[in-house]
Picture (cartoon, rainbow, N blue to C red):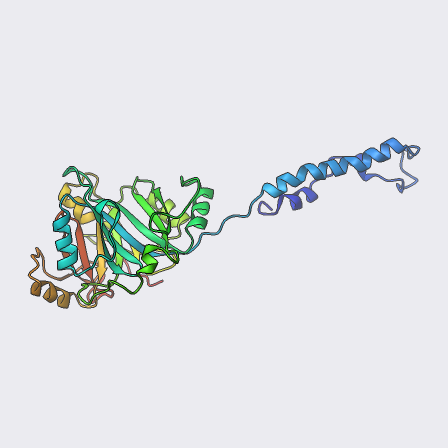
Length: 343
């Protein structure tokens, strides 16, 4: 069997030294009578198997068991670029009601959605043609084990892992299409864990990032990474037409959040890229959220509507055109294209 340990397979192979297997107890009818006792040959017959066994030990010790993938729990944060940090603060802070619990590196604004999820906005946008999405981060229960697991699957990862500047374990990889994906393990005593339960005002328009999405050109190659290696699984796919797939929802293996593939956009404009590369905030009532935003005098380009997945949603856009989608968790209308799998 191919999955048997090496030493078991070796035991089942024919003896490569048949002379060693013979003893002085051979049947008398054997055509060749036993040779006279020879001390040198006897010693050789004892030493040779010992040498073979000794040579096998390093090989057995080098056969490490496969590293198990640790849990991947959900979206940890989405990192965005801006060329106007004051305007970004007005949108994510005033309009959406999120607080900044602590300062980020190099002036990055960090908006807290809940104890495990953040929106990070850095003033690093240099050109209008740049993608506003810097990276998406997912939370894992064990970043060091996940790094080792991915390395065993042939994914390029850092050679080692130490705590980051915030006191957590985190590392970055590139998916098959070059998207930057970060994995974060929150550690006791880190700046985020020290702020658990803080900076969670009632003004928050949402208390959960339910998904994030970006353009994908080759979903089959993407699935080999997100599906086969990381364990994400499809829960729904749909499109602008019933016969076409424009979106695929890939849920994390150990949580409820998902990554959304945005398909069929080979050359998106700046505006379209902002629509595709987005974040979604869960709300219990899209109409009530719309009313709250109206009361805050937020300028909105759209009104709530039922999407192709049957869920109420409201599309907002930050000052650099990144879409922040407000979405109800359950369908209220007809779901197109495929059933939503709740698993």
